[in-house]
Amino acid sequence: MEYEDHEGQVLSFVAGLALGAILGAGVALLTAPEKGKKTRRRLVKAARDARDTAQDRFEYISDEVRDRVDGAVQGARQRISR
Image (cartoon, rainbow, N blue to C red; front, side, top):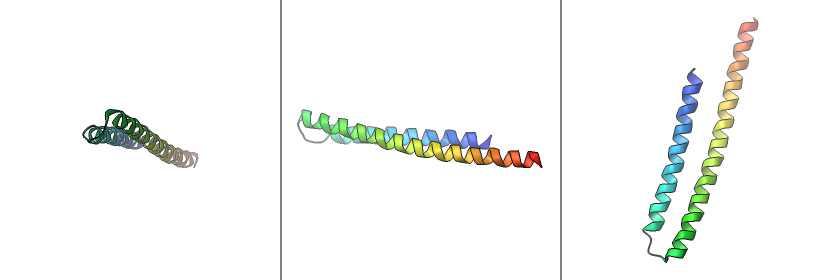
């Protein structure tokens, strides 16, 4: 169905966004002129922040998709029951 294709595209986008954010933050931190211990702390914090952001966005998108699917199912049931 159409909404399944859209859901897959959205999930792929979110996964790519999260991966890009993590990789970008890692490269930026690793190339920064700081001591190793401080850089590792910043890298861990950036990874946690990226994970939390990705998780929040995934939950939001999942809720949106679920609501749209529920609405489509209800609409289909109403059309069938007529």
